[in-house]
Structures are given as C-alpha cells and as structure tokens.
Length: 220
Length: 138
Ligand SMILES: Nc1nc2c(ncn2[C@@H]2O[C@H](COP(=O)(O)OP(=O)(O)O)[C@@H](O)[C@H]2O)c(=O)[nH]1
Ligand SMILES: [Mg+2]
Ligand SMILES: [Zn+2]
Image 1 (cartoon, rainbow over the protein chains, first blue to last red):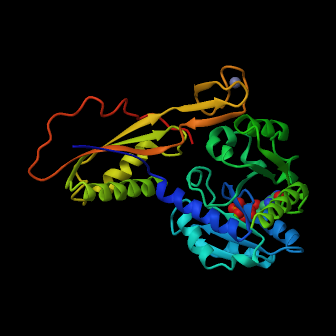
Image 2: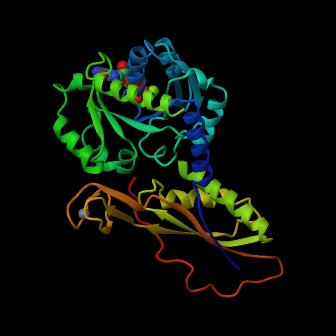
Image 3: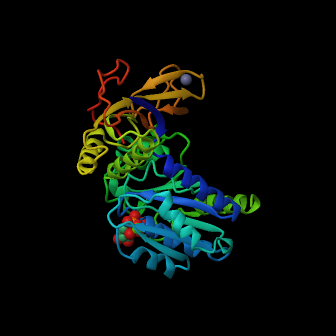
C-alpha cells in the first residue's frame, strides 16, 4: 500500500523557528544569526559590537558551540547577557535548542539578541533559528572561493562582514574580487569590510543593527 | 553530519504515519531532496541504513532519493528557469536578481508499507524518477 505524505522533513524545525520568531517579535527583540567558518572572527565581532551597543541598549548573545563556555565568557566580559549552548557534537543549532534558551531569558529586558551558530558553512544553512536576520562573517584568510562553494549559506544571509582586513597586505586576497564573488551568489548582500580587533569599518554594521532594533521595538 | 538529524526526523514522521495507517512494515521510502538543500544523498542513505537496523518497522525499507534541480524565477523578466548552482543567473536576461522556487526542499514524498498477512504485489509505475547519487552543492 502506497502512502503519499508530501511532507517536509524540516517541518518540525520550521514550525519551531516560526514560534521563536513570533516570541521575539512580541518581545520587541531584534535577533540576528551570526554564521561563518570556525575562526572567521564571529565572537570577536560580537565582542566589539556588544561593547559599542551596550552604551544605549541591552544586548543578549546565545553562543552555539560543540563544547566549552569560552565564547559566552568572552561576550559576557563585553557586557552582554550570554547563554552558551553546547550542541555536544551536533554541527548546527536548531530552533528547538534556541527556543529552550529563549524560554529562560528575560526577553522583555533585551533590545538586541545575537545567536552565534556553530562554525560551519553547510549544516546550519537550512536550520532557521527564528532570528529576523542572518549575518555572515567571512575572513580574508579564507580566500575568495567560499561564496561559490557555499552559495546556499551566502544566499541565506542579508549582510556580510568581511573580517581581518588588517591582513590585506600580507594575504594574496583581492577585496574587490571577494565582493564580486559574494554578489554573484547574493546580489542583495550588504557588505562591510572590517577589522574586529580594532573595530575599524564597523559603523555601517552598527547603524544597520540600530535600525533593526528601532524597527523591532516599534513593532512590539 | 546533520544528515543524521534529518534521517532520524524522516523515521519519526514515518513511524507516526505508519501507526495511523496501521502498517507494520515499511518497504520503501521516497524522498525528494533539492540539490541546494545542503543534504548529501549518500550521507543521508548511510545515516538511514545505520538507524534502521534495529527498527522492526523500518529495517527492510529501501530509501530512494530523488534529486530536485534548482528552479528560479527572475525578478526582472519574470522568467522561470532551471539553473545549475552556484550560478544563480537568469538565462533569459542575465539578471542575478532571482528567487529560488525549487531546489532547497527536503520532502518525504511517499512510502510503501504493508500490514501483517497482506503481501505486496509489484512495484507501481510512478513510484520514483531518477535515483540520485550525484554530488550535491551546498
Ligand atoms: N588579525 C585579525 N585577527 C582577528 C580579527 N578578528 C578575530 N581575529 C582572530 O581570529 C581568531 C578567531 O576569532 P574568533 O572570534 O574566536 O572566531 P570564531 O570562531 O568565528 O568565533 C582569534 O585568534 C581572533 O583574535 C581581526 O580583525 N584581525
Ligand atoms: Mg566563536
Ligand atoms: Zn530574467
């Protein structure tokens, strides 16, 4: 006997992501997924960003890592309320893991929430967390071929931070070419070349975040 | 290895459906996997065959994975095209402003099951299209 299901295998995750999105919207929190390879500088970017934003808002960070509490400690030191999720081997965060953390956070106090995913350009792509936006951190040492190799990840993100531009003189990487490669797979991408160590070039990103925070607060 | 997560989820859905249909054996399962779904068919098959071994309902189930190509809609000229990733480019007008209509999905399309005492006859014609073993883009 043949049974036709025509059901998405992602349904359980997509439904939870929708629930998370509604909860965040109702609480007036602007949430941003932070994606990228291990070592791209996701946490360092969040450290600088938290330092800059906590002047006039409350910032939360959910850190997803296979193990350790190290990244949560780092952004906590920058002034964020931080929760670490250890995926215990899993290669991505999913909406159920994030939802469990959201339930235990005082969302009413937060204006901005970052969700740093496990460093990986494949597995997390299709697992939405419920965040309103997705940002990708790509560092110069990774070269210019990543957008073409991982188009789905790059297409799923609205903004890109090209990190470690302090290394531009020592690496054979052309920033213009990299920008072109990103736009080839995602012509809508907003791109900011930055140095997370010095916070150079991060003003545009901060402004984009403030705009999102204003929108989310107004929509509450 | 998020294929393991997906394989587990596919089995959970099948178990629930088989219980509803009072089926106690699943013989084959047909999945439709988009070529930019970030799932690797071979890894999915491996995960499925490992997970099913001790499962009474599913141990004899064959997994058929049908690849779904990328179909885009051009935001400029409105054309609908099948394209080869990573080139998200309208073949009609050259615009890169395109929306993906198909190719990202992971669908549990159908399955074939039996009840004790009832034997299944031949396979039906429309069961699946081309089996996919090809490399999948992420
Ligand atoms: N030269 C340079 N190194 C950086 C920069 N940002 C981060 N790093 C270094 O890159 C390494 C990985 O950073 P981390 O934030 O842990 O990356 P994550 O794995 O993406 O979270 C650390 O040693 C950082 O100090 C930068 O702008 N320039
Ligand atoms: Mg990190
Ligand atoms: Zn066109």
